[in-house]
Image (cartoon, rainbow, N blue to C red; front, side, top):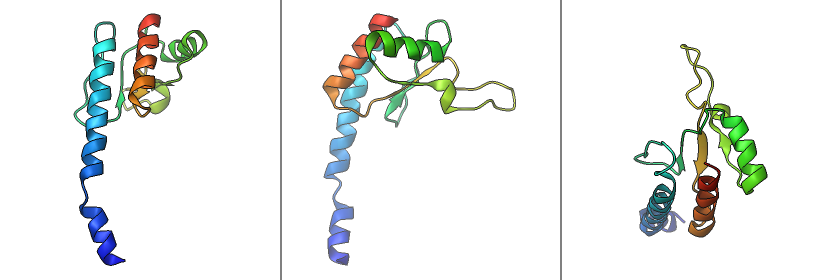
Length: 115
């Protein structure tokens, strides 16, 4: 059992494949959204934090779901106010790029239509 565990932990092929898949999704989604939305490009992550037009992340999220059938999280629900009283997620969306490439890209295109 220990030998099998060692072999499994030393296999990095699945890690490389997963990393490559996320790079491909980030690249595709960035190409679609960067012209219309402002967001930092993370060095290592599976989600993006674009700013929403108008700044109301909850209203924008509700509209995105009702009009484009795309479900994302309002950034304000992912954080809490700091000592300065500001919530760092407010006015942003949390876009998790965890689905396969095609549905992720389709969601990005629908999001762009709403912006």
